[in-house]
Picture 1 (cartoon, chains in turn blue, green):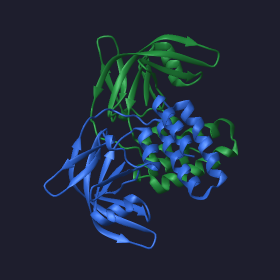
Picture 2 (cartoon, one colour):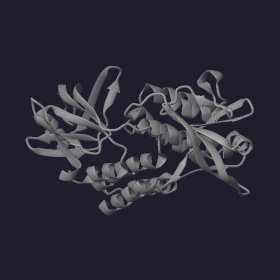
Picture 3 (cartoon, one colour):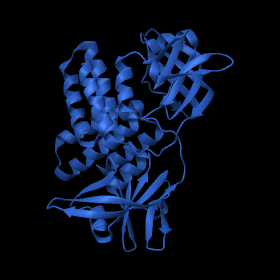
Picture 4 (cartoon, helix red, strand yellow):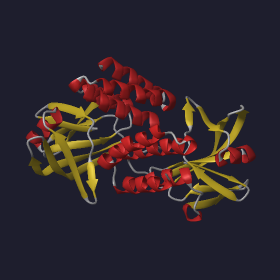
Length: 176
Length: 176
């Protein structure tokens, strides 16, 4: 989960961080809050979380103040997810902007670990992520096929997910 | 990844462990090596790993001796995955056997942590797991639809996976 800010206004959104050998990158399509904030501040925080509800919520909703902790450093204040297992704050450098997207290299500035616990892959959690992605596509263009894909993943969530995944599925359905 | 043994013969296979509040369970369909070993020994080890190649390999192949470490305890010797981030050894109790499957409760006996590192969900790794599951179904009944599902996940692996996921995909294709 990526947290960003613009001035005092924080944001959170699920985003992929790309690692190619020793280079860390982010690629963002134009138009999102995350895109605007990174353009303005050249800064982001990668929060490690495995909470399916957070993935669904921050795909569709603004950040809730209770979910955020503000970290103060000599050079700026920035938001992180309170419940993140760990986070790394990055400066965005060598940012390249195309008509559709932005690609930035990420230079680690500071990291923090709240808790470590072993986490095996969980098909239910994975299915929540995929269903959420199809939900954003459905909301963009209303194509029926995305609803079918959400149904497909719902079967996996019901079979392999725990209570938190089922809660996330209900939340996802409420946004559709 | 679940490692089991029967006498001196070890086995590894990807299996889901179910947690319902404070009860830990495993459900296994009849016929697999894991099923037979658990029936014989009432014992299994849950190994936490995020290695996509291991998931593919141990869905289709026997364990490689180099991948295994043998743990000695006063009551038995048992195999664990050398590269597991952590593992927990369980006794299988209250085992119920139906005509199709076995359900056992898992009682933790001993655990070990090799390494902890923060691990955010990765869509490429998730897609490897799903593609592998569809590959086993394809090998069971040859239905075309499973090949299409593997193609569907291949797109996600190519887009979101790292080198290890792409290696796992090539290995998966070699088993088909």
